[in-house]
Image (cartoon, rainbow, N blue to C red):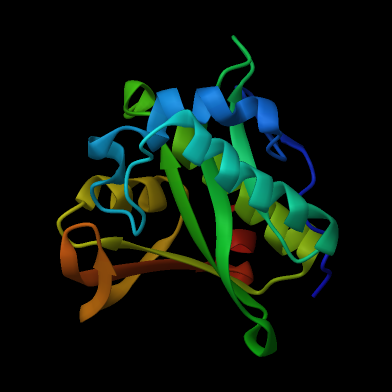
Length: 186
C-alpha cells in the first residue's frame, strides 16, 4: 500500500480536497449541526462552529502523516463545502479500507455522494494500491446503501447488532468493491 494521503481529486461536479480551517462555517452550517444528517452517524451534532473548528484543527494536523485519507467535498459550481468522505479504517494485510461519508441534506438525492465515492474508490485502487474498499450503513438507513449501490459496490450482508450510532445498537449492512469488480465495470 502507498500511504500517499489525501490528494485533490476532481470529478465532473466536485473537487475533493483536504479540509482547511476556513471550511468550519460551511461544515457546521451544511451538515455538522443537522440532527437529520447525524442521525445514523457515530458522532453528535456540533453545538457551535467552534466545535467544528476544533475538530478540523485536529484533522488538518494529521494530513502530513500520509495515512490520513479525509476529503472535503466541494461543489465546483459555488465553492461550497457540502460534505465529507474518508477512510475510517484500514486492514493493511488485506489491502482493504472502510469508507465513511456524510453530506448536507440540501444535496441528498442528486448523485453527488455516489460521484464522490466512485472517485475516492478509484484513487484508493489506482494510487494507494488497495484491493478492497467497503462501507456499511445502519439497516434503518437504506438510502446510504443506495449510494453504495450506485457507486458500483456489491451487497455483502448484514451483521446483526454489530454497530453503534446515535440511534443506539444497530445492524450493519455491508457493501464492498474489490479491484477485480471494478476492472469488470470498465
